[in-house]
Length: 105
Image 1 (cartoon, rainbow, N blue to C red):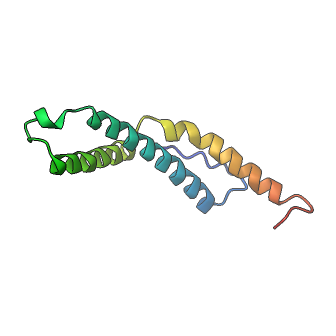
Image 2 (spheres, rainbow, N blue to C red):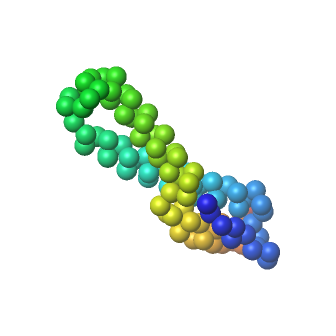
Image 3 (cartoon, rainbow, N blue to C red):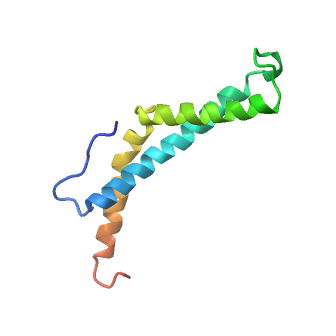
């Protein structure tokens, strides 16, 4: 799981931090979903034990989504963890820019 990078002197509220963290995890989930769908698309369904067809294609799609979600919940590949510091820095910069005199509110 992602470790907490919320610093005491930060301008980010706990809600902003949670939102940015959730967005990083969601991005990794989308990537993992795409990855697992490609993995399952390479399997020839007509030669499998299940017999192929529309039902199996549908089942494989659901299986890839569940596999991706499980992988993301377990920490995934670490993509979210690597992105989080940069995303937090960008949010911090946006917060500070809005505090400048004459900045639009």
